[in-house]
Length: 480
Image (cartoon, rainbow, N blue to C red; front, side, top):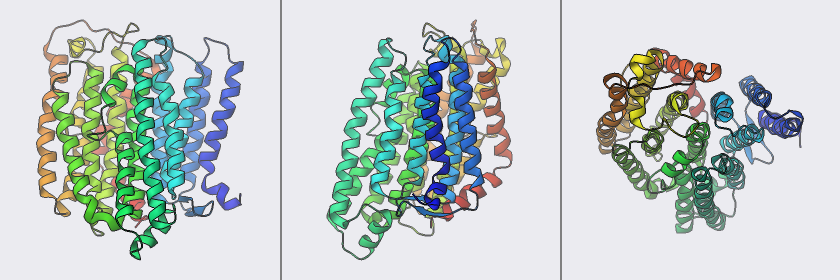
């Protein structure tokens, strides 16, 4: 390992070492004081975030070109570190209240974040596979963390079995890609494809890899696991999973398809268009029938995967693709902040017995807890795409990029499905303010800070979105 190799992966290496040390230190922390473990986990993530931001002017490859450090990797890694911090903040009081406070929770979360960061820096399909497993295996365990609760164990088992099945597609796709090009390096695949050395075999390999990524980011028809896993898993795990897995999955999707498989745009553009449209339609329509807030947000997560996937549809257009992907990355930030805020409100109303998760349990929230209801209103409006929220700005950038690529039909579907989503998002608002009830909330410092800060960020950044979009654009343009 050279000094350049070490520096390229420095934040990731520090995070992995910190997670291993935390696993040992936790043995010395007595039961009932696992809040110390949570603090140490947050400290490790903050250190990782600082090291990531300190690499602002660095660029290059390491480990014989298998990993890369560029503006895009820094942007995504910073967002993932923030996601981890928010995940710790939500879990701090939740795991204690639910009787599942065990120190390994935070260690698993750190390892999963490490896998996500490696995914953002992967420049080789073998590293993509290793990163996919490193981020997924801890999530399988975290989904079943509320054992012996049957719904949690069922969620973990479903996620594991279907995840293992999807991983098989990825491995088979990598094997076919290697057979077609003679390499697993993304740069090598680009060279082989540009020389005309790869044909149908490469297209089939790319399609199989797309299936695996489609499972990870929950696009239709690879979404079957999402509602059951989101409902059964502990809510703090679901919140982290809904944001972190999407960020990592779409980061890998950009590198692999936007760069390595760009020559296959004629074959894959129609497939991506169809997946995006189906995901938006199915996710939003099925969400209408939900009466459980966790299942509603699960189908919402599926629908938003479709919106983000819109950014990758023009990947054969070299002029439009950078702007389109920058819009997708910006939307990931908007979705992450909104997602964690909404789940923080869900956790605040969830009871230890698993009650407080029906939509009717939100009746009277506007009268009894006006600040919490106002924050939830902001998150619902942002998910819908209503001003003044970050969700509206994100959808505006996405629709503009898709229209610039000439995909008018997809933009129309995006607008129409957003109108459909207004029904079930605004239904939550109506229940909070226009129905009588006596909801009971939990007030915890870190939980309160999460939903309050997220609501402020969703509104304030929407008023001045240009700096964030410029940062996202700068990060993406460095790839092209």
